[in-house]
Length: 606
Image (cartoon, rainbow, N blue to C red):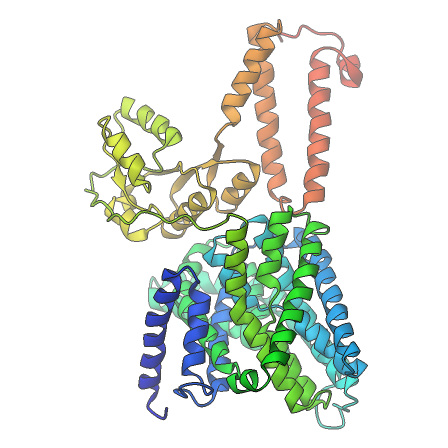
């Protein structure tokens, strides 16, 4: 196609609008839809786009923005405690996969230098495809989603020394050819990372404060894009992944007051450009090579996916400490090849480590594995009984704006009790419930609630959320609960938000969003424990005092463990220490133990 840029943009948008809904309708996911559209438009099919390389280079901005948004979800303190899964599980996966795939190449008669580059290049997985699939399934905050992200982060870091080593392995005198030596490239990369970390920490918040005072949304949007693309450009100059720069910029702003506004400004660009990236990947799949050597490509893809899947499953079980079911899902998401492998193989071809035919075969294998991964994940999820629950198609209710003081999201048992208390105090509130069956059931008893998804900004505005003084997120489903909390924090960053938490980990994720947390069974369990103490002969006032002391101690522990909740070893240690501390406190009440001896026997009612 040789038309104008406008015509090309229209073709891309039309392909996305047609392909993605069709593929999602059949449960195949958006990623596969974009890839199929790219294959159809590419130089090896309809030839709407004759050269996919420029499109792929431009569309990488979508991956950059995705990593920036993910960085916004991770504060520096959380990133520090992730060092064990990043370097432990991530390092084990890259090392084991690289050596295993390299050994297979060596057994096929490929030289050891080429086999080494081939093995470690194929050990890298696609960050864009993996994160998009996890995001579609709302699994990024799950156990296997967090571990997958840690492994992908290590893979981005591991690509740096791999690229630096290629000239050495290929006996290319980079310095004499006018290029950089590998050691200078590594040093330059470390300096660039340090400059971004220290400079960004000092400057970024001040820049956004100045821009925010202008009260011009378009200037704030331009500044957000400048920070994302500028950080990516700086890393690219240093020979690193553009996505790494954007990710670090997001981490630096994760604790800032601008976090939610930045996420809202960047996400529309991220979604559209990420779709373009997947289409460009589809265009780069050489259908001619696949058609001319189908058995070779098929066996290569099978070996790649099987080896990486087995290693990822083992890594998920042992260093990752996942349940078998979660480890299987981890393997399904990351068993593919990655876009960075294409960069590695391109550099290896320049360094005469591999010829053009081998390069084309490897790129075709990577592309086909990326196209097959959504299908593999869907098949594994269905095999494990993890199919997504379809919501009923029912139009959302129109909600009159009655100027409520409280908005209750979720009207099950938990939300109804809150609502009854508000009604008794004659405090106006509005309740939104996403289950039509629950809406119909509650309305039969005279309660006026409305059907809708409380994570939809338009619905919240229609319900008068702009004037609400307090939000109550009482939804039972953990992911839906977190989605609503994120939306409220993004749209109303200064509002008071209370949320129901299923357990401690759910509570910590809500605390990351700055939400006031109430654990759904905690207070009732403590009250039951108090009654058990009375039934065992304890006086009522003593039992009540000890239950209150336990409550205060456990809530303090919840806050203390919030900063380290990604580090399982630290959690176990602090839990054991807290248990001993609590036992000593109660022993002291009874005049027992070291503390009891120091304080002397005292009346337990005091």
